[in-house]
Length: 194
Length: 301
Image (cartoon, rainbow over all chains, first blue to last red; front, side, top):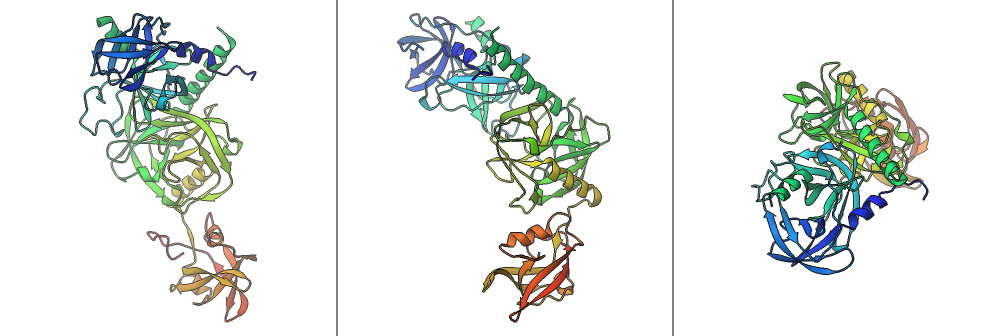
């Protein structure tokens, strides 16, 4: 195919930083540093979890930070040696800009799904989120990266990236079909505190 | 920067440009509790959205692209094509740049736009899945073109536009016409309904005032008249209970839809020639199509 209109460069780079987190269930995560991993708090629920690296090793990770309200957990895995991601700024994206997710939807390893960015703000009323009493970590009133990208169980904790492969959010959940991710700037704030 | 990065980034920019251009004519319509729907500024002072999302005909407001919320007046609705029309002050925002849906082919990249709050327009991305000719919605309306895509019509996206990668608007997306598929009411149909709603406040439907049932005859199919109301086009033309219509304008009747096709569009006032079998003898009877009285259901065509 001659056109070069493909995400394979960016996707290959990002996939090299994505891991699977096994903690009873199965979720995704990515390398913030070569030994520090970001995932969802609802993926890494125990004190320890197994980190499956892109090159097929299973290494032990210890939860060193957790923010249930923002649904983020940090895992330290000294033996992992996985290349770190680069971060992007979701607030700089325009609606309609291409984004992609990497995760393990329904157990399919390192699957890429492509879509477009919608907004980074509170979830609109009527999306089935504010209706229920907000559970911890699921408040509709805090900003979420919202994207038209198909996610499935197994994407949680994985990255959503801009077209260059820079991570703009951490996939957290699907509400009325809409992908919600924790904005990367919030993540950086959490990491600077820990 | 490698070639592949720059060209995919260019596509991403182009899609965002298309959203920015088209969304200048897209509003949020507050005509139901809680979640608004989306509307398109179809022509100056005229906002089109889907019928199903307009639950109240008074106290309607729209949110403009600049975040300002202004009152809008209900003009009319057409359940058959799932469209509703509102009036806003002239010059409130840009008028939609309309494309020609006939140029869209399966595989073309398209966007669905929505405006749900003051936080800017939103987009869903996908491809045209299938196109085709005229069809009839289950709600009864005649739609000029079949235009289906794999776009997700999120809550509140109903009434929003289908946009091509150049930012032109090709129709209004409806989740209600063929759920769960995203179906677009194409530009031609929307413009026809807008003209009729502006003209009369409703879309006139053709009607002859008789109830019919399909039957088989020796020569093929037909429609048996099982009731004829007084002072209707059918009664005035001299049709009688028990007549079997076997052809319309010389074309033999294969299905009930043929009659619906004759009665749709701008049919009111037109003359149709029916071939009718009465007591075993075929004769021709001319009927002038009338306008279906308003506030009636599907019965009594």
